[in-house]
Structure formats: C-alpha cells, structure tokens
Length: 417
Image (tube, rainbow, N blue to C red):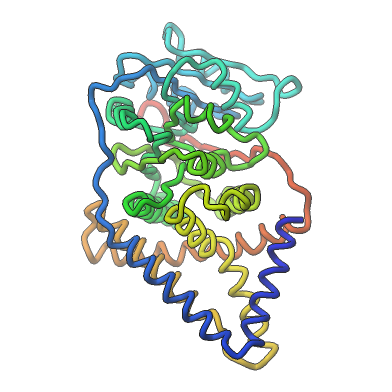
C-alpha cells in the first residue's frame, strides 16, 4: 500500500511538472541544488576516523550460514587466523540442506573460541536478522563483527578496526568491500567497480557529516548501540540498510574505513545479480517508508536528512520518475522535463566511478576504461528498481532470506589471507 501511494505521488508530481508553466524551472532548481551537493560530496576531504590502538574490548564474530558447504571450511580457516587477544566466534547453520554443518564442525575441531549453533527451521524465526539476533543473545563481546560466509580478511583485521570504537559516539563501522573474483566475467568486473564507487561515496558522505551506511559483510557494531535500537529488525529483507537508518536516527555515528577491507565473492550470472539487487532494492526502499515520520521529523539532523533524501531520490525515485517523464512527454509531443536532473545524477555517478578507481591508485587510462564499463554495468539498476517497486506496490510483503549462493571456486587450499 505504501509503495502504491509513492507511485501515485510520483505520477501526480511528474504530471504536474508537465502541466504547470514553471515545471521546467522547478527541475532546473532541483538539478542545481543536487549538483551543488554532488560537488560537495565529490571533493570533500576525508580524514581517517580516530583510533586508539590501546582500546581492545572483547569481540564476538557472528556469521549466519545457510547452504554454504562450498565456503564453510574456508571461512573457519580464515577466522582461525585472526590475530586479536580476546574474541569468540558464533556461526549459525540456518537449516542447511547440504553439508555446511559437517564442514564447519570438521574445520573447527579443537578450536575453543568457535561456537556452532544449528537452527531447526520449524523451531526458529525465519530470516537473516532473526539468525543474527539469536547469535547476539549468546554473544558476550562489546563489539559484534558480522561476516558473510564467503568473507576473506587479513589476520590483523580486528586489531585495525576495533580501536576505531574508542570514540564513544561511534555505534558501527563498515569496511570497504572488494570482489575477489573480479576478473571472472563482465558481471563480476562491474561489481568490483561498483564496490569502489560505493566505498568512495561512503567515505565522502562520512566526511561531510552525512550518513555512511552498513553493507552487511565486514560490518562492526557496538553491542550497546545495537541494544539501544532494539537489535536487528526481523521484518526486513536487508538487515544492514535497516540498521543503518535506525542507528543514525538513534544519534549514533557510523564510521567507514577503506582499509582494511573484506573480500567477498561476486555473483557470476545475470539471474543471480537480478535476485540479489532486487532484494537490495526492496529492503533499501522499504526502510524509507518504515522510518519516514522520524526521518522527515529531523531526528537525524539537517545534514544527515538531506544526505539520505538526495541519495533516496537518485537511487529509488528518479528511475521511476524518469520513465513517467518519458511517457508524459511522448503523449504530449514535448521534450522530457527531468533531463537536467537525470544528467546531474549521471555525471555524479560517473565521477564516483572514476574517483573510486583513482582513490585505489588505478592509472588514469585504466580508470577511464573501468569507469565506462562500470557505468554500462550500472544501468541494470534501472530495470531492477522499476520492476521491484512495481511488484512491491502490487504484492504483499514477503519476508524471505533470498541469500546469495557462493561457489567457493578458489577453495581452501588456494586461500591466502
């Protein structure tokens, strides 16, 4: 119902732009303001978050695993290499139908820090958030570290990230994600460029006092902050994006670190990418509907609110509005009105791709090629948003953990953290 109302509002808004004499002026004003904000984001100076190496609280690593036999042993091998004085590991096998639990058990034999939880679907609440909440109730750490089953990090990961929580206002930290199979095909190459784009935006948004966001894998959360906002929301399909807004609304800061990073496996087919991004689109948009009163009420402060509204418009509303604009323009035999805003958003994205590449030391020529390929790849977001928002408006909400299937094609023997 809420999404249907948003569609109705967009239809009326775009139609009004075409009917009123000042419609084009409104669009140019919006494009100008968005452009100014884009320039501020792109060229902000981004100092590394403050850190205290002496701050070494107890850490709990949490992993929700479902049908992960391909990467289970690799996961445990990576976690056993972590070099940190006081940490525990909690891995939940969420009703796997393959050999996930057996492989976790075999790989973790004799390791006292590892705790395995075997969930029975018929007796457990569904969804990844429910799994994480169950592990949170068992964990004893002051800092909770969330990994996906395909995560790969260096042994000093905890020693380099946990000290960032010495600043008491930091409720969570997200590290840069990197696709380890980027050279596999066009889709994985595009995801690799997208991760650099996302990391750059995260870094820059945090630098201007905006809202850095959580991305699930490689996510660290202060246990007290999580408790203060009520734990992970079990009525969402994107636990990380939902928690992002609730932490910011609760007055907590989310820091971002480009190093160290977490490596993960990119999906290798269009169908897998479509399923993954459809879930991201649904959960990412739903959070704005769920928390709209508090968001528009200024609970996060002006800078964070503006930051969220601009990125919400560019990511979710503009693709729909642009299609509606084309339809009305065609029907009236006129030019599309939203072109200036679409161009600003496009230039903003292209610059993000390029600066993200250059931030990691990629040479100019290669950065330009990767920017072009990444921009072409990123066009998939338009049909994903249109289809998902249309289906969300017409269908009831389904709370299903549509997890990404991991192949683990490199195997444990080839893994060198």
